[in-house]
Length: 97
Image (cartoon, rainbow, N blue to C red):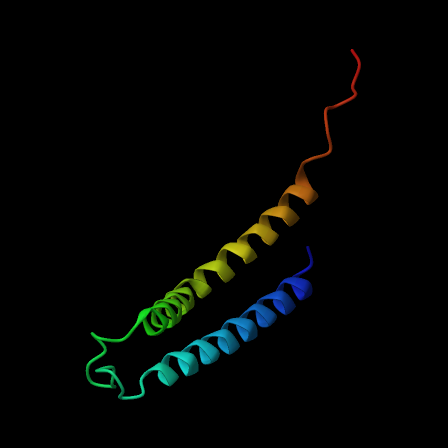
């Protein structure tokens, strides 16, 4: 895997997560209409629609906390792959005695 390919994949993943979070927050806010006891100050009486979209938005927020760790592990994997391909992995020696 090339570093350029990995960087492009990380950027695309970040864009997809950002768009998904925006859509989920918009859906969650649409359920807070003030009808039936569900309003912006008290969401205890909101239905499953609100709770599901709120939980999904919270999950994407937690993903953002792990994003830097995912990047560091990906870069470390590329570096290890480069080291192993440069110094090892040639197979068993064919020396005869």
